[in-house]
Length: 314
Image (cartoon, rainbow, N blue to C red; front, side, top):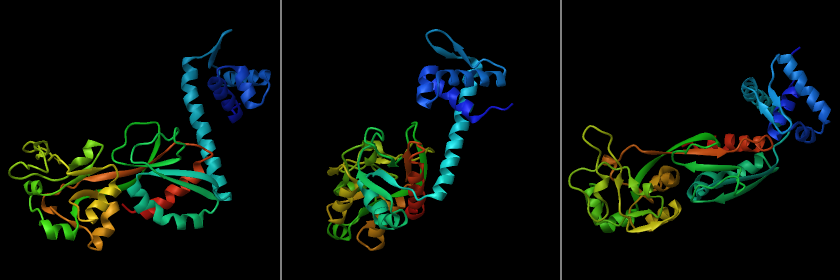
């Protein structure tokens, strides 16, 4: 006789709850019923999964291996059921999405009217954070992260990558002239980030003498034959948000290094001008959506990610 999913659920619940009594309460079953189901499972497998003592339960070596497979089976079934359910009903409920303000303003907010028309029963909550948020602490369902992801227990979906360019307004260039080399940046006002420091490393290959006022020697190209290193700049003004940097550049304050997702329209319409293209390294910022796997949220999360992925087009 083959193992049933009910027996797998009992086994996993006993381990997660720490006792047969706690598992019975969690499952709404009797203690004797849970105990019989666990014993029946062990007989079918012809092996002991759990060592029972008067104080605690302990997995056997076979039990540890079986537990991993049992979890995977139950998770797959839950996901399959949710997938079918999504086709039968419209996703509904609250969905909180967090992203840095530039990405929120340029890549998410413009599409939310269309999203709400498709999914009117989803209540969107959009928040903007310039730092990496703790999803559980901030009660965030989806966070958009720009840059390389750190190892974590979160699920992630790549949305693409955005090229970095050095830009300035036509008004600034008309007044101060266009720098033709990295070294010439020392004569210009550079707009940088307050933090983190790595955002003040611009993807420029330095040639000739080291730059002075606006740059530092640590930004030289890498060792001969190696990969060129980004140029570390010393900004004349800093801000915590990329959108603030963009507004400063648009106003003619100085030169900034920004991602295409927030400046593509400005460049296309002539409000910003890319410069130093001949020494620009092809550096791109990966953009990812991160989230915790949750059956209750799966429909809302999936439809939002599917929707935004085809519209961002990074």
